[in-house]
Amino acid sequence: MNETDVPQVIGVIGGSGLYELEGLTGARALELSTPFGAPSDAFVTGFVRGVRTVFLPRHGRGHAIAPTEINHRANVWGMKKLGVTRLLSVSAVGSMREEIAPGDFVVVDQFFDRTRHRPDTFFSDGIVAHVMFADPTCREVRETLLRAGRSLSLRMHDGGTYINMEGPQFSTRAESRIYRQWGVDVIGMTNLQEAKLAREAEICYGTLAMATDYDCWREGHEDVTVEGILGVMRKNVANARKLIEVALATLPTERRCACGRALESAILTAPDKISPEVRTRLGLFIDKYVAR
Image 1 (cartoon, rainbow, N blue to C red):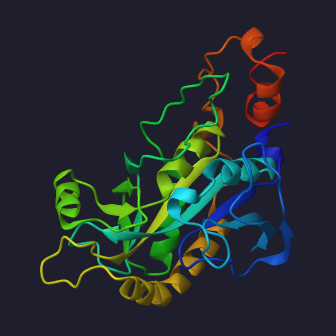
Image 2 (cartoon, rainbow, N blue to C red):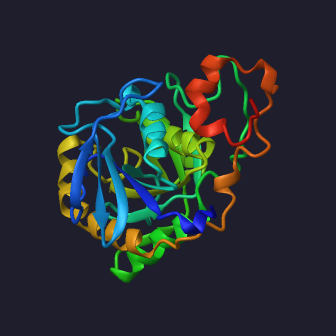
């Protein structure tokens, strides 16, 4: 069966402030057990404008999961298990550029890693794969997010580098100033691992980053506070919901990108060296490539 003959399933991962997806009809919560432990919450499936959609709050309902504690592998495995081929991620970020004002949206195209404690691959413990990651987000998803935002007359920025810090503390002034010298555009605590794992799972991935503050680099701007961030977030989360709804309805059905073939020549482990346990754990990803 050709991919275009299979009904499209789109995943949405909500970040800080986005704990449920409005406009989701026929909603049903699914508790999944994964080979990588428990996901952040139940996956909520339903339809948005006729498009089958799977929603997951990254930090769990009630925001009980810290950035370092998010089980990204379980979250992405669950999306793959439920048939998701494209994944839209919403993330609150700090702006590292004067022109990216609080409340603006950035459709990022690059990531820079400053994390230390997070599993970020499915391929370990008996199997090795190296996927291409030079362009970590899907062009088709990015273009759809940009068009959706512009159709709503929102302030959109096309491209930018997201530096993924460890957290949960915010940056020191020294860190913030150095990151700016590195040429990054926004700073957050969650999206890089999602992007890496989505690529390994052959899922198209895109980040919609919502700027909530100027981090602590900007002279004359008040220091980052949770209260300030939440204030901006409350005003703009409704725009994020509208944007995602439009994007879900306008994503092209056929994938013309290479995301769906990311593992085609990436698995290096010889088939006879792949144990039954590994095949069970990663069969969702490798069965179409590795003969038994």
